[in-house]
Image (cartoon, rainbow, N blue to C red):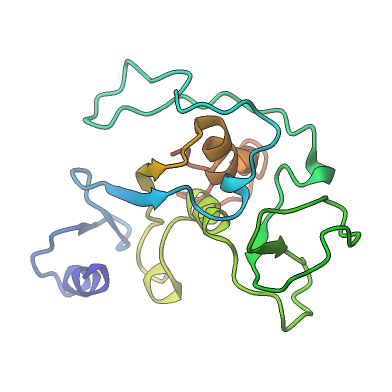
Length: 197
């Protein structure tokens, strides 16, 4: 649907979700926002119950927000356990690997394996769900076809149905990439950089 709406925008036809910018790119209309619902905690880093006390309460909500969906304020997190995997990306895996195997980050959640920066193993599966969502928080949703003429699309909210823990979800879905912004990476193009959920 989004792809078809983008094609209509490029042809100058009436659209539902996107509009043309002054620079000839298209973007999500200001009155449209994207929301994700997942029935359970996303697999991968978000299901890793370490490095924070659990709980479903968000610490702070932006009371100044002029939106139906007020933004949760995300305090900076101190990534004190990077070597243990606090900010690690994981891949889906059904391999019954020996958890004591030295990959440097200790035991990982069931159904996952550490992401190897060099994709040299055929057995390495796709990124876990929470890692894909973290990637979307920084780079936007979409694919190669959409990126050629559409500004990055970012989720406005993410609702987790069960097994939800705010500190674990915040760390996994966006805050572990908190330094991926223009203040730390000056050459980032407009629209890219971490967008907290």
